[in-house]
Length: 397
Ligand code: HEM
Image (cartoon, rainbow, N blue to C red):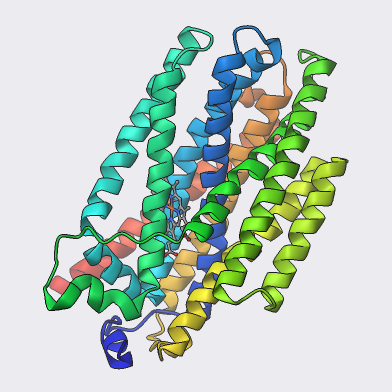
């Protein structure tokens, strides 16, 4: 690929802040996206198994609806959290992102409708299972298959975007222009590695689930022990499968001895030890977050190197500093996001820990955080719209 073509595809306006910051935010937010993708696929997949056991087994009778609910919430979070890396990737790697969207345009359209259909079917599955123990097997399986296919499509976009040397052949194979938008590329080992992570993630989730519920009187000791042990088994088997797939992927692309890869493998080994001993699953989850960031970093490292070797170095992207926008973004992200998430998490934690109905209005911390969140959001809306309108009018009047 001719470097000048890649450079011409960049945004002529430049970017509003230093590229390394967008790169770091991409790594952070993709890890968050992936965390909920994996939890959604893992919880949903396990819940389908639960639908077969639910009628006779009292443990699965409790666990299956909880897993369905976990998957349902995770899908909404993965969608919201997918937007952030999408924005950051299109800022610094815009030639890659937009070329892929043109080459695979049909798949991009299909992706949206597929996601809508899959999520609607998920709700059907949820209600069918609520109505009858073991209900919704068929619909749940179709929904699950559609979600997995959505992941394959995301993978296609990610892989096509890092094949600039092949773009011309995809666009005009044998010199004949093909603008159908059906370009589809899969790298099996990478895909298997990424999707296989759903197994250890749901395993660690179950360890947390067991630990979290262990303080409640209304869940039996056997149930708590059963879920912890199932979590440990799934976590260990899943980590071993993912580790093998990861090493195979790294060998395939010649990165096995890179320090970031070695750090990732060490992280996985520590995780394996923590999962196997299951002393404190909350600490395990902290290490999982670090490993998720490393995996996200590995994806970015390979892309960065590939593009830099073609002469497209994101650190050379022209910067057109726009301090107010960045300040607004950071304040939104850190203050509004931070307080809002603290409110939701505190509320969820307290609801889960209490037996019977939890009344948030009688809880001082929840009430205070709720009031702050509302006040900050109101202030944010006034600032956002006020600022936008004043700039708009200043420009057009
Ligand atoms: C059920 C739905 C989804 C699944 C299963 C899924 C899964 C995945 C997977 C497996 C990857 C990694 C692909 C690879 O590196 O080979 C990925 C990347 C990504 N996903 Fe999703 N995803 C879903 C929905 C979404 C949505 C709705 C958005 C945006 C709103 C999104 C945004 C992204 C972005 C920006 C990337 C990184 C692309 C890149 O680096 O080139 N995803 N997703």
